[in-house]
Every structure is written in structure tokens, then in C-alpha cells.
Image (cartoon, rainbow, N blue to C red; front, side, top):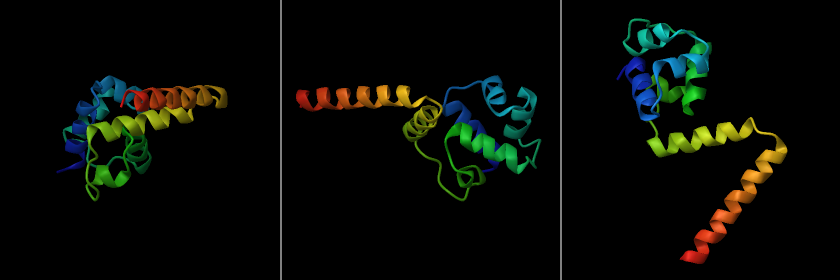
Length: 109
């Protein structure tokens, strides 16, 4: 499987439009489409790094040297990345929320 096919699968499994991906990595919608269709075969390392980061996968996944993670694992990775952009206070709130949900879950078992 080529890098373009992997990019398209990742985009579709994350329910994102071409425009959403383009905006996230700072390129045009047409360029993302060309990458997915294999019409642009030599993306810069910087763009590959941004795409991998955006999808929450390693560069090895995009190049095919590592297996593609399950969609749920990608979602968890994206949530983790989103946490990094939060303030310390907001991260603490999220941690408290998770602890509360875990406690509630264990009470129901």
C-alpha cells in the first residue's frame, strides 16, 4: 500500500474532510488530494511529520514500515495530543473527570 492510500484511510477513518486535514497541516486541499491519489509522490519530510502528528501515528505508519493502528487507538492518540495544548489547570480538570468516571465505573461493576 502506498503512502497516499494510507493517508486516505487515516482521513476517512477519522471522519475528516480534505479541507480539515489541509487546514490542520497548512497545505491546500488540492495538495492533500494529490497526495492521497499518488499524484504528488515526494512530500517534504516536514509535511509527512505534520500529517503523522495530525493523525496521531508515527512516520513509520505512513511509510508502511509499521502497521496502521486501530481507529480507536488513533482517537486515543488524538485526545492525548489535544491534552498537551491545554493549560495545567485544564489538564488537572480532565484528570479529575477521568478519575471520577473510573470510580463511577468501578462502583457499577
